Image 1 (cartoon, each protein chain N blue to C red):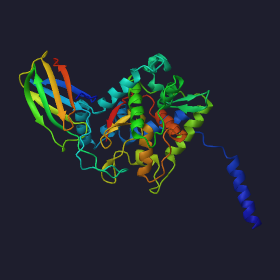
Image 2: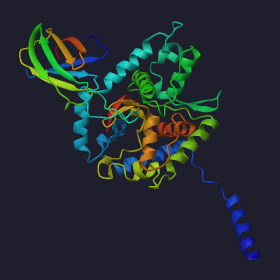
Image 3: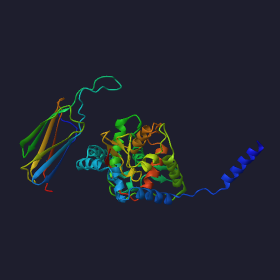
Image 4: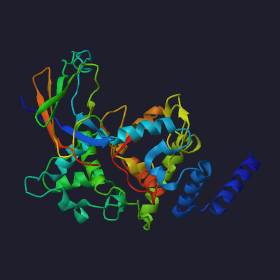
Length: 286
Length: 108
């Protein structure tokens, strides 16, 4: 018994003293890109912004997608978002007063690490904060109230559409940002749910293949640049958090709350991993 | 009866033929679905007639039914349309709501 204890103690000492594997965000990003470059050598980097439609073997989906894009149904939701964005509040101000540059060409910096509140802030949070600041009712109860959530998705989609084509640039210089990044990274690689899948299982190893027959799996690279998006199955614009929640449900894990820190960190990680890709939101997705 | 439902139109000229696409945000309820909470049937609500007018003259009529999806996208092809022609689309549904959309055909 004493021997075992000694052995365990020795192990502990070794574990404690062995140098931690250093993986900084920059080298993570490089590895992440390299992984997909090796997996799909024929796919140009920028096409990852268009979801899985440009992956090899997805030609039939791509044809359908291109037809949809001639007159995409998300334009209805986008018009609703535009109207909300441009309608003045009771005090006469509009959403443009809360955002730098009137909200134009800034979405590529979202989500960002906020030093003051020590958290990752998403576009949805800033839109809600703007409503609060101007004494308007916020978008709340987003998990249960679909109508409100879709409205928020519409506004967010319009906000992102003002920055269409801008390349994602996430500032990760502060230690807090790195911490949030690590939390998101952990979520990405952690297995969960009854099916015991991690995000990486499906969206890296199985990317470009089908799950359960009819659900093609997208590549992890370029995930967040197309959101808020309209899925054919949903027929409405939806927020990225709703997609995360449904994705979690697909692997039979309990989803987190809409706008929870976990999802924000995940979005932060995913967006950083998509650095350099042009924003295509809003977009059509299967 | 006027409506707040949007009617969006897009046109495109290809090989002398004008493609007209109309997108309407409409629930297109069949009347067969049940509300999960109240357990009551959702009443039918769908577009019945959609008419296309070119320079004020009716050129096409579509009789739609419950088989058409939510937020329908309806397309027609016009032969004699020229850039600058005025296109007007009207629709009416079984609840008496109606909507219109207008556009001018542009050269591609």
